[in-house]
Amino acid sequence: MLLNQREGDGCSVAISGHTDSDADDDYNLQLSQNRVKAVKAFITTHFSEVDIEDEAYYGEHKPIADNNNDQSKAFNRRVEITLHCNNGETEGNVWPILTQIQPKPTDLHFDGAKGGVFDLKNGAHISIAPKTFPDGQINLKVSECVTIGDAFAYGLTTQSNRTGDGLQSSGMYRVEAFQNGALIPNLKYNEIVIYVPVDQEDYQTFDATDEGKYTEWNARPKSEDKFIKPYQSLCELTSCTIETAAKGMSRFVNCKFFWCKIKSFFSRSYKKDRDAYVLSTLKRNPNFDAMYNVYKTGLDKEFKNETGFAKFVANNSYDDILAKMNELFPRFTNDVFYAMQIPSYSWVNCDRFTNYLNLTTVTIPEKVTEGKDIRLYFKKLNCVMRPNGQSLNKSAKFNRIPVGKIATLVILKSVIDVLMMSSEDFKVGDKPKIHFKPVHSADLKGVFDEN
Image (cartoon, rainbow, N blue to C red; front, side, top):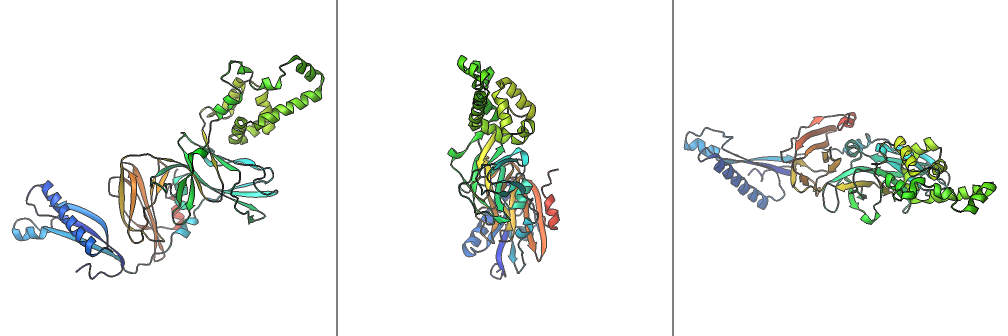
């Protein structure tokens, strides 16, 4: 009768099973569960459009009458059904509100003919090759998503489109290039590389494939992955594993043969031409290029420019170069960067799979709607997940969630022009709580305050 008389769309039910106090506790809990299963099966068969949003089994622990006689016991042997329907509650769209709290892109300015290397957040660097863009002044705007708070504001997730697994992000980036205030047409094969600092060599690149409500990610072939170890680059550049390499690159500057030394001594033009050749050869070396690109700002401050750094490398031993690099960059011997190509104006993600084996499904008693934002955040993993399937007017379900991890469930919706938010931490395996309260758009900036 209750389900036949329901009004409104998007109805759902919560079912709880109960028993009297006869028999032991374990038996009664199982009996209450069996009763819920029977009712659930009936609803699923006859009212398939009604969603089952919650199930609970209480056994004898929530009586509505005492258990002193058969009549009161009969009252306690029951299944309770709570019906929820959307009876015209007007929900707005929260996504335009989120755009108001997005961080401002990093503004870079350079000559398109020359390109450049620039610092980004969290120790990352971006390198733009010469002639990537037209000659003249270029304004490159770089959107950087490097924290959970950034992901919240940008409406991003870190989740594999292929497997549905959560991904641990080391940074998501999007670029847009302008000249004279106009967006430069998207370039398919531009030469922009972002060097992202990582702690292990198991990251890979994921490209955004759908920038709708939640961005979808597809992994690039691993053959395109490239990890930069500046310490290793220096070692290969100076052949540090060879016993004679204590002289470093100076062996290319100093003449090996007697006639070369004599000619260099008496002919300044010969020595100048030869030094220029050595420096040019050195700057074209990929190991030199890797070191310079990831540390350009600091190296230019110390050596003025690329040529100054090349001269230093060419005329010093490996030990001296290593000592100077460790002085300038204390993490030099441990630094690892992931070189990520940026081929378009879409988001690009530096991620790795979390690879947890004990996974579960988390069901949230909150409907998925077009204008609502429901996401699950793992702060320590820098991982963000969205409801799987995203079927409208169905309870939100998150699949392949690691058991035992602490997550933050954030739900944002607009009801009759009032912005409502629930933000609650819970341990995966426990039932998440939902407590909505009215908020202002300015309050959203503090949802993931990392101070």
